[in-house]
Image (tube, rainbow, N blue to C red):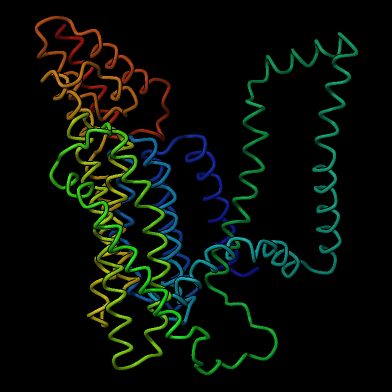
Length: 487
C-alpha cells in the first residue's frame, strides 16, 4: 500500500468518526467549524503528498464557504442550520470538482452544471471498493487467503447479528435467570447500546463514502469504448411560425389579463386592500398565482431562447421582443405578489415563514431581471450571475439574523397595540432573547406573555452539547442570567 493510500485511509477514518459523532449526534454548532477545518487540512496535506495538479481559481469558493461555516457559530435558527449544512456541502463539492479539474467543460454552462451534478452524485459511491483493492494489492500470496478469511468472518458477523438479537430476546422471555443476567450486564456495563448500534454502521458507511469521494476526485475513470464524435449542429425541430404564433397568443392573453385585473394589481402597489379579501388571503393568493405562472413563463423563455439561436434578422428581433414581453410580465407579477406580502407583514408583523416567502419572491425578481438583461447583453454569463446572486442572497438571509428581526418587529407591534399576542415569537430561536428581555424590563407591570416566552427560549438552551455551541445561545444565556440577578 502506497503512502498516499495510507494517508487517505487515515483521513477518511477520522472524518467518518467526527462527522457521525460530532455532527450527526453532537449538533450543528462549533463542531461544523472544526470538522470543516479538519477536512480542508486533510485535503491540503493530501494534495501536497500526492502532488495533484489543481485549479487555483477554485479558492475563490472559500469566501462563501467561510461565511456559511461561521453561520453555525453566530446564529441558532434550526431551519437555516439544516439548509446551511446542505448548502455548505454543495459549496465544498463544487470547489473540490473545480480544484481537482474533474471537468473539462466550461464551469458555468449548462453542460458544466450537469457534469458537476453528475460528479457530485457519483463520486462518493463509484470507488467504495478501493480499500479492499489496496489491501489485496499490498498483501502477499500468503496474506491474501488470510484477508479472504477475515472478510468471510466479518460477513458472517453481519449476517449473524440480527438473528442473535432475536435469539437473545426469545431466550430472555423464556427464562427468568437468563433475563436477570442480561439486566445485570446492561446495568453494570455503561454502554449506550442503541447509539452504538446506530453509530457503527453510519461510521463504516461514512468511511467508504469519504474514500470513494476523495479517490474519485484524483482519478478519472477511463471511458470505455470508442469516443463519440460531437454531433454537428442541426436546426431545431420546432418551426418558427408555430412557436411564434403560440408565443404571440400567450402575450395577447397576458395583455387581456392585465387589463381585466388592473384595479386588482394597482391596489397592491397602492397599499389598498380590496374589500372582499383579508390581508392573509390577499398575500396567499398573490403567491400562489405567481408561482405556477412564473414556472410556465420560464419554460416558455427557454423555448424561445433556444429558437433565437437559429433565426436571424426580423425573426430574431421578433423572438427577442416576445421574450422581453414575457420577462416583463413575469417581473410585474412577482413584484405585485411581493407588494401584497409587504402589506400583510406591515399590518400583522413578521414571521419566519413570511420572511422566507419574501426572500423567495425577491430571488425570483433578481432571476427575472438577469434574464431581461441577458436579452440585450449577450456577454453576461446567466448561470454564473444566478449562482452568485443566490449565494449572496442566501448568505444575506442568514446574516440578517431573521429571528431577532421577527422578534423586534412583533414586540414593536405588541407595544404599539396593533397586536394583542406574542404567539409568533414562540417559534423563534434564542436570537430573540434580547428583544424579549427588553420588553420585560420596559413593561411597568409584570408581562406574563413575555415571561413565558423568555422561559421557552431558555428551555431551548438546556441539555445542549459542546458541539452545538453558538454565540446566539451564549448571549441569550448571559442575558437571562443578568435578568434573573437584577430581578
